[in-house]
Length: 249
Image 1 (spheres, helix red, strand yellow):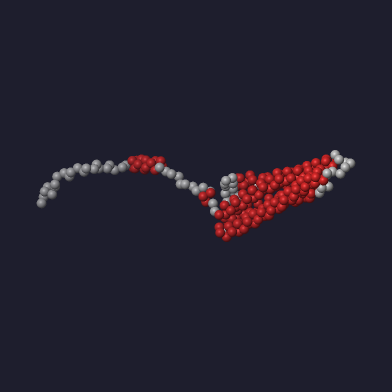
Image 2 (tube, one colour):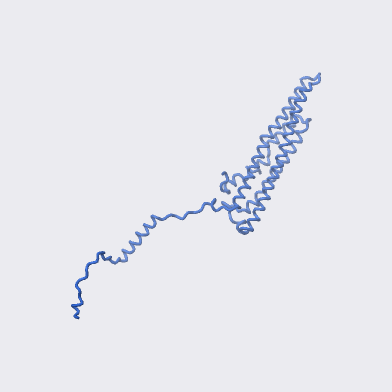
């Protein structure tokens, strides 16, 4: 067979056009176009929020701190609202009794007048003693919270390691250890406040206390110098608002 016999004529054109080979510049343009297309569809990876990564230790620490705040607020209400009201009513009752007696110097005051004022005064003394009992309970709860934080710290060192408990910030910059070793400094102010309130109640309890002595005692009660400078609001509220996530839920 001749070579011409093996020739079957021109091949039929392909239904698909032949792709022209890309030059290096065309390849770069193609890659750039693909990159632009990909970038337009790019979705940044979602970053988990800090609350999503919270552990039991985060939540328990926040709960302890919020409980301390609640106790401190209740302490202020007991002292500055309930206590001041009871102390003023006590002094008012005694003043009214003294005025009633002074208006009748030559005759014995009627029993119902004296008895009524004395009963009112005794009731207010009982209220003040009840407030002292509540403050003592609050102070014990504060100490229990401090103990709970310390126990939480040792639990965290076992579960997550010393480095995490001592150095890793819980939310912003303070570590669990920083909270645990710093929070107990709030206790002396409330201990002194409790001692001062007990002293003042002992002064007011005596029916022999003059108006001037009682007035000065109430002024000391209202002042609460230790709490003003070293209590929760003076030292810890702003710090916790900055350091603790979800501080005001």
